[in-house]
Image 1 (cartoon, each protein chain N blue to C red):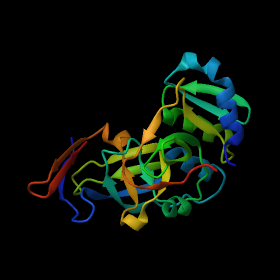
Image 2 (spheres, rainbow over the protein chains, first blue to last red):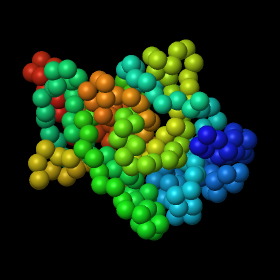
Image 3 (spheres, rainbow over the protein chains, first blue to last red):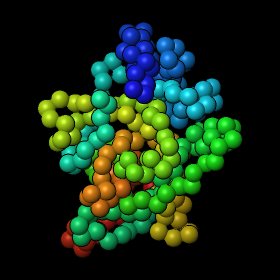
Image 4 (tube, rainbow over the protein chains, first blue to last red):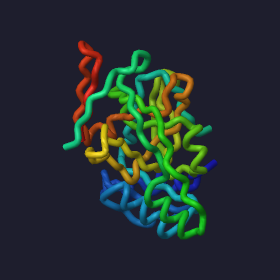
Length: 79
Length: 149
């Protein structure tokens, strides 16, 4: 499953990352690369450093913010 | 500030044409890898104040051969009482102005969620993550909507 390892790394490192709440973390495999002020900055660094290999960019939230869509849509969920 | 007014779509309401493409950062990575950068695709997008994040139909995302770069917890009427984890893809989004004299709203990178929308006659939901940079006026009494950015 794409980003499975990176998602696990995020969950594992969240207690340490929480001090950067609101910033965007770049994760590749088991490595936390850095945190960034903006989504775009983190994404740019991810592509610059890892090219087209998988990496995760995620806003650091100690409590995961749930996105709501009130329209009846079928989102593509992770299995 | 660019501002334009369009007629409400009889079936879907505030629908406008946007251009969705790979993010600028991914485009740069594709060029570095010697791969072609796919051209942006025009899409019918519904402005949806009930969506906290922007969604794109998977048929469009598939044309860019994207791999996910994010995950998000999402709750929709179809997911039941609990939130579920969905993948996010980085894309660029352009809302063109109504004419050549209008400056478009160009977002070089936003995370979007894949959601089956084409059956509803649209390709994308423009959520509040994009609307936070806009003024949106829904004037149902005259069948028009205005967007300014």
